[in-house]
Image (cartoon, rainbow, N blue to C red):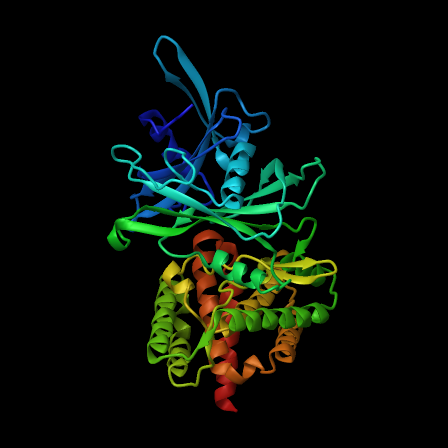
Length: 487
C-alpha cells in the first residue's frame, strides 16, 4: 500500500492542524501545501507510514510543520481520538476504506522511527533504505531523513506507545520496549519536532553532548533523525535540521514545578532542594563549557543582546501598555548591559525553569528540554550565550510558583518563600561554580527583567489571568533598582 496526500486529504488537514496544540497560528486556519515528505517502512507491510512536510502560508511568516500520518485498512484499536480522517480510496466501483491516524499514536510509526535511528538508515519519499532522496511528485518537493544512533546498547523492540498530553510545540511518544526474550526493558521517550527550521536543534545537540560526556544530569541519549526538505528561505532552497530525538524516559517522577508548588502549599522549607538545584545547574554549565567550549563576548554580542531586549520590551509594551511606567527603568537596565563587563559565553539550556527539571530518586535533579525559548529564532538559540540567562530563568520560576499559589489564595503572599528559594539557589550555584552570579548583578537583573517581559507576552496572549505574576516581577526589579540608586 502506498498513499500520497490526495486532494481529499489536503482538504481535511487544515481544520485538523488548526486544532493541534503545536499549531502556532492560533485563531487562523492554515493555508497548507505539501513541500516534501519521507516514507518509513512498516516491517509488517500492512501500514503506510509517511512523514509529510507542510508549508503554512496563512501568517506573515511561512511556517513548516512536520505531520506524520499512518494509513490503515482497518481501524486501530483504542486510537479513535487520533483518527484524522476516514476516506474511500482507489477504484470508484471497488473503493477501499482507509483510516488515517496522527502517526505518533500508532505503534507502527514508533517502531519504524526507532528502527530508522538505531539502524542508521536513510529514507526518501519512496521509502527505500540507504538511498538518496528522490522527487515526491509534482508540487511536492522532496524529503530525506537519516537515522543516527547514540545508544551503545540495543534498547529493545517496541511493545506499545502513548503520546504525552499537554505539550505545546512538540509531540513526545513514550515507548514501551521488550528485549529479545520479551522481558520489559527501560522506556524511551521520542520527541517529534513539529515546527521545522533550518539548522541544528539545540535540544538534540546539547543533550547529546552532555550525555556523551557522561553527565547524569540529563537523560541518556538513544538517537535522532535528521532530515532535508525544500525551504525557499534556506540557502540554495534546501533546509537541514532535526526531525526527532529519542532518549531515556524516567517514569514515575515529578518535575520541580510540582515539587515546589507542593512545598509552597504546605509551607514546607524548600531551601535544601533549591540549593541542590543550583549546584546541579552549575554542574551542567561546567560540563557544557568543557565539552562545547567558551568564547569571549564581542561588541556584536553586546549589541545583539541589547537589541533583543529592546525588541522584547517593545513587544511586551504593545501587549500591556500599562508597563510604560517602567520605561525609564528598562532603558537604564539595557544601557547598563552595554557598559558592564561580561563573563565568557557558552552553550546553555536557554529556557530554564522548574518545569524543565525532574526530581529523580537516587539521582537528584535531571534537566530536560534544551530547545531554548520557542519565541526566539533557532539561529539565536544555537549560539553561545550567557550562563546567567539560565540563572535568571530559574529565579523567575521561583516567583512563578509563588504567584501560582497566590492565584488560588487571594490576599495571601508566598513572596517570603520565593525569596528563600531564590537565595538558596544562588548559594548552591555559587558553591559549585566558584563564582556568585550576583557579582554580575547588572547582567543578571537585566536578564531577569528580559525573562519577565517574555512572560508578559506569553501570558497576555495565552493566559491573561496570570499576567500579574510577571508584571509583579517587573515591579520588584524596578523597586530594587531604585533602592540600589538610593544606597
